[in-house]
Length: 118
Image (cartoon, rainbow, N blue to C red; front, side, top):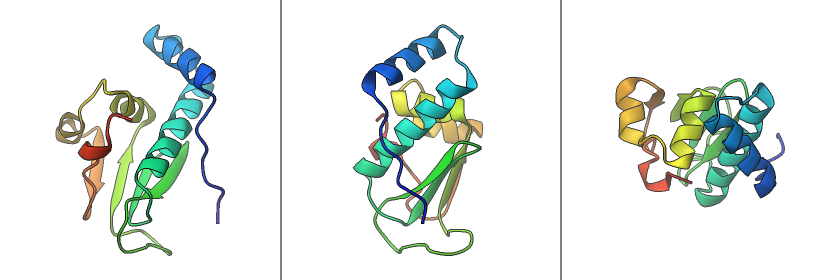
């Protein structure tokens, strides 16, 4: 089983967010922020019934319910790095992201509105 993600150093997160705001973020910033915010989600919504994927950076299983162990999970959320970071920071609302196609969510318990922003 892969190691759980861990929240990043707050100073590193702040610096990466500053570079995002200045439109000078690099791939390493996206990676740090995606993994950081997925780790925070994992802490706040423990469980294994919904898989949140942000390719190519990371994926986590969250939210209590039926545990998923093999193959494609019955509940999947997938988005890109910029959309995930915007959702996590409150720059983008969950319903807007879903309606625009920035988030693809299928299955039960895939509405993260109550967990966002992080």
